[in-house]
Image 1 (cartoon, helix red, strand yellow):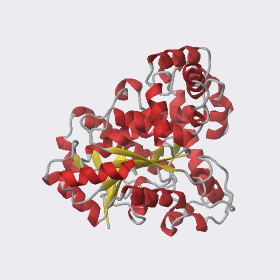
Image 2 (cartoon, rainbow, N blue to C red; image 1 turned 120 degrees about the vertical axis):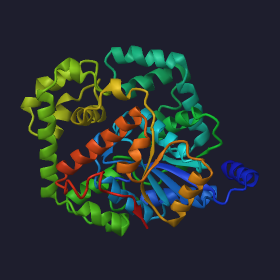
Image 3 (cartoon, one colour; image 1 turned 135 degrees about the vertical axis):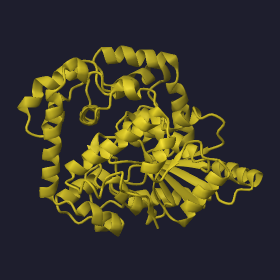
Image 4 (tube, helix red, strand yellow; image 1 turned 30 degrees about the vertical axis):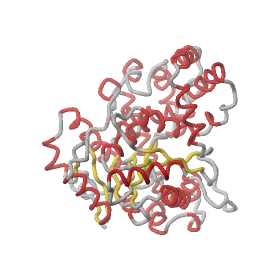
Length: 419
């Protein structure tokens, strides 16, 4: 109710034609739980249009997306979204803070977003905001650093440090992935300058973030759906038809080939690196480079390598992200403290195009808008070009791994889908 009141006041004061909702998403793949969040958020914020900042061909867990960014963006447009922009690759393979910051900054940079909504297990924006504020306490940061040096993973160190200074009441929230990401969204939002964007939370109604497929549940997790498809289980009741069609196109045998290609490329990359060089990647450090070089010749699959390197200090997700960073050559020195430098449109409908035209006409967008990178990359700064070249390289690598047509699916050939 508070969010709706703020938005009504904003609409009156600015004479807005549309109230625009922003969402940061992976849609890996898009499923009915996502549709619930989109519709619930639109209803509760009285939004007229929805813009999404979407992960590209790689997702935050350190994996290849279930379908490429163009396919997932088109599916989003067919299921209630009006425009989709790509989150740069460096951020998609960054930690939760890097990913959340990039998504929030992109949505704000459109110049037309009024409210940003996210799903979380608690759905309690007030409590999440309090925790986000507490997490900025300098004592917490120092304690996390101390605990990390003692061998704790970052998530565990964060939970211990928070409990020491603020009690254990919030331990459950700090152990749930969507709540953790929500806290990062809130922190990123608080760092925006001169922004009137309002935040909104939707309580997650689906099974847990990585829960196994269970057809007795109303909604399924994305990871549960992906595994069910690989196991040839019918998931048609839990996904839009077009989204299902794309992820089903990869049979188990095709997925095995993709996994094999990925593992071989990563092993080749590791052959050419020292332990010290591995530690220069964003998720490197704390001796993880030496650990990978010690075991990679003894492993037979990507999964073997990740599990073999996993420990109290190194989480599964951190290792997966590191291996993808190594594959794509994402060095800490190149992208540390980076922010998105452009708005790259992947797909839009007429409403989305109307918003984009308005942003251009009224000079609302705070970053260059890209629809044809061969022509428009000339207007970018040197650092922005470096981000874009990484996105192009990441897409080319994805196409090699997914056995796609290298030319037809190239970022230099593809254009935004207009529906």
